[in-house]
Image (cartoon, rainbow, N blue to C red):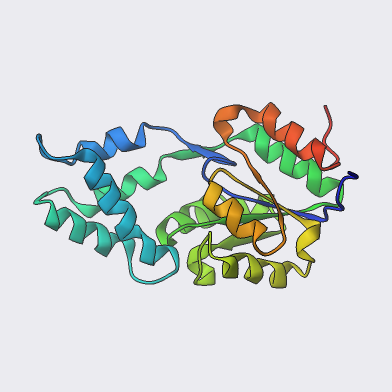
Length: 208
């Protein structure tokens, strides 16, 4: 089967472009009293974050409410600070720039709440690496909702079958496939050579 024509690539952030610099779950578990489930605390925080991922409510307020339920005196800022502990993988950023230099549009497609968006976009200038950036908190819809991908397709003005989406979450891959995008599962844990091979399989101009 010949390679499809790919004009644009959508890159997820966490697990694809960037990785945590701490053992995130272990760090969160420090805020739990002995004898209580750290996993349940982490899940509570993840559920509490969901509205802010689509721009509804303040994640700080949600953290405060979770801490109250758990009887913790920890300031919300101490928990939120853990969301800043990440770094971009330079090799992946370099591959993105190779694609752009060859005329392939590259876009960031990520679920983020406003505080983390501010760090990525305003402080660390992720926008410099991409043609466009699509943060769920700005769009008002999040992966894996097909509406998220449809919104991006309208913005970049490309047919779905000319776009490749790369993410480390299988549900998000399914959401992208449901609207006709090419979509591939990739995790930074598998190494950057795996990403290079993935891009090359689609005939994209990546140097060895």
